[in-house]
Image (tube, rainbow, N blue to C red; front, side, top):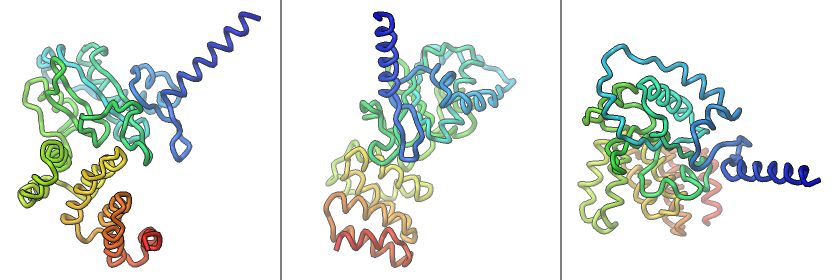
Length: 290
């Protein structure tokens, strides 16, 4: 009887531990969340197939790799989504490169972030806070605990070149420089300071941003993290850059409505309908606001 009770307890404890580190998204798919060991991707049937497939597709180049010695003193924090196509591709390939260089896997640390609207690209315990994570995967290279470089979503060149440049101390600029500038701007300046030099900041972002999705994604990262004012400024800039895209006004309208600035939100949804008269979401949101 005691043995049976112990087994039931252990089984229940195992289930609880699994439940605390996984979640089911709106589509009914189970994903990882929070810090985890690499062995999870290698052995868990939820992830092992795509991990193995992409690990084996990595091909190491034939050139010199004497630069790898500089990586021996680095740690790499890897933020990913087990729901994310780029994470599924690049995380296994990054591990394959790390292995090919003969580096210690203990230098790698993995954190899975949520998808979904409530905790979009957030960790269960705020593991991403203060790190300017807006795309996954994000690889943060650190020496003595300080960030020295990062790779955002995908390599700027190719994976080996990007890692070699980091080892040599001349990293490429990571992808999404417009979003990165915006994050730094919002982190270091007050809203009033930004508006006092608005043209300068907007022009700087405009020169760097590439496409509507760059700031739109960042805006939703802020919005789901409860940083509504930062979200509003991000969405507002996006409407300046892409005034013929109804989606940028839709996103700005959503954020304004959450901030209870209903008249301004309605004005944004009217702009959506001016560009896309059949947009049912804008019609529904206007009806709610009025």
